[in-house]
Length: 414
Length: 187
Image 1 (tube, each protein chain N blue to C red):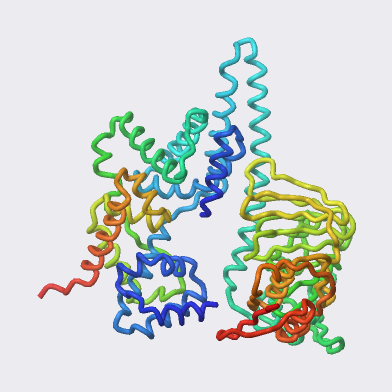
Image 2: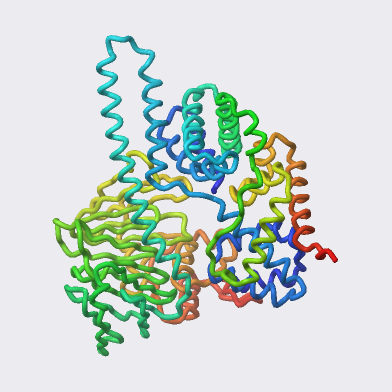
């Protein structure tokens, strides 16, 4: 994607003056976001306009220093100010009433105060969990071609084959990697850092991997996903962070609930089977329950984080744009088929299926004509290792034709 | 950052949904704090003023209108609150001196992009000097645009100028900085 933008830019002459770069919103955005993509973009820009190197570097430094001026209040400070605002709000509502109510109103204020503190406590607590996981996510913006397991010492171990399985032993010390069904590789987690440090598994697009955590919980990870987890669970609960999609079979342990933290939802369970989808670039985050029971909590709210207990066969869909959640009865097979290497659809419009395939291979597919895009499809699509095979198969299913445009993007037509 | 969200919360708040206010608070508290500290460098005064802004919103809940520019309205309220506070504390002359005064250095930030080199340090010093060379008005506009990510429309509303003036203000400030940065050394 980034490369396309660069080419596009180079064809349309860009004005590379200090002040024009800073008035170019897309330039400012790109630098603000930072990361490997921005770095590459800057390098190319300097190569292309060597005489404007100083303008470019000054503009970048300007953006970096002005954005660094944006301060963040700590969670404690923010909640302290907020609780004062809240107290005053209660006061506003109580003062018009008569004096003989005074005692009651005082009690009411105190009670409200407690509720608020508990509410805020949960919010800031859960945000701080998310923050510490996010630090790891942000520190590793590398794009991987192959699956990677990163241990407590930060060393990366490649998972060479698709569908390789990783298994932690109960102590979290030893790790077994099974590739292509037989070859066993044994890794050791560094002993002294094992308790503190988090491990992670990164699954690139077009791949799937399965991991068994030290408590026996297995997670099948879909293409383009990342799971961060401690090698060894300590404390009151088992917390992991997920970006992307995972099918969880949680080992029962009612003393230590299992919590999946995502950017928008937290899912907590004691022992159960469910699917979570929390891709960064999608508009909906969802949890679908297969077996057992889970609680889903929305986390962007300061008060009363809405919690919902799902029943088997239900799906919880959270819209990131509107911050609204809906719960529906769903056909589980539509949501979990990917873990077995195929996608099953029941009366789904073609466009939805194309979206899933695009997501799986991280490639773009176009559909010509709205009517075709909305054609309802039922059936099974096998997710082969090759993107081209999958697209050909998909086009056949809808009895359509397949073309490629000048950018080599597949177009499905009637 | 997404516009529809803040408008959504704002509408809900005006309709009496008190939870929406907490969403607005979360959305803007860091912007408010950053801006406040630039206006007057006194943490507790800024925090009290943030508190007053939101209490003001609650008090006026039924009198407020649906404004399309919630962020500008809230930032502007903070600006007024801080000035008001300084006025009642009889620190009138401080107002003149301290709003976006040139004391702050745009100094430290950690970043992998070319950070740590000597050139990097030199550039930073030149940029700091170039910013100091701007007027308070210009510095405020630059802050709103690049630190608080405001649109020209929002800058115009906060600083009580027209939208074209806001654009010109930013453009002139950048041009002036550029001249400062690339000026030929004196003979």
